[in-house]
Image (tube, rainbow, N blue to C red):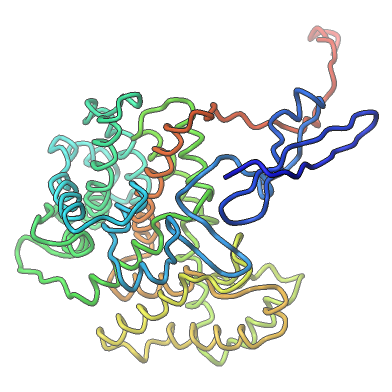
Length: 431
């Protein structure tokens, strides 16, 4: 990033301000308004912060017009095809792809931290049996600071590093335990001889009474899901983690805040909503009816899994996810799955329809991920916890970057106050 020779001139009333412009490595120039209030006594109004850069970052870049997603400069398509999740974790955390030795050391560190403190099993038992897995994860992740107090000092680089590895390593274990608890099965301990994705699957689906062998195609599909969701720039949950971190909160509390934000149906629950929509449509013959409803402004129905807050082109993650869906369903012998038929035909019609082209409503990553997860055997209640497992490394990378930023300040958005003006208190007997 560098300061541009250009400046933006802002005039209002008798005031004229020259605001510096910053040029990023990629993307549009940014107007620096940090001194706007001090010099002009005005704020900007930007609901949802859709036109505001809240931080500088070297981690992830999105070009919504081109449909491009880069992790540290590497296209997501290349990483999904050639890399694997823990290598991507290393890239996000440390900025470069690891050497063979660095990758081996990193994988060993993560593998050696996958078990959770044994007393945490009692913590799980405090939840109702029918508690949503995300409710459990919010509580358990936040409580990690009580079980691992030796890695909560954010001013100690070594403690930050230990906390980072612990969260990447233990989040799949916590999610699997939440799932097992919700279905009344015993917890399954992690296995150090399995890779990250395979280990997660065996913790979710194996039982002590039987042998369980992870299918490599399912493991690869899960690894891709983790990779595709690892980070996505300054989305709602990542911004929540950064905002919590700006107060100096411990890393486990910050990540718990990200889990809580992700729980929202407009964020982490989108793949569940897309799957439920496909099932509601039910058959290929009913697609025209729902297409018509989606175009009707008076109808509250919306096509879930289409369009994106940032992407105004095809979501680059959707192509990879569609390939994984084909592989998983073919492996499981459910090519005739009606939900998949509806998904493919709906995608075909929408991509050819002028209305959807004009509205930039292209399939996003959520459109196929729910189909894959359901085919694997996960209930919809586990879709968002799996998203949280995937996104943990992105939250941590963003949190660490924020801590190291010398310009970082505690987050404090301003407001446009529209309440009552100053008024005097009236005694109760006179009201």
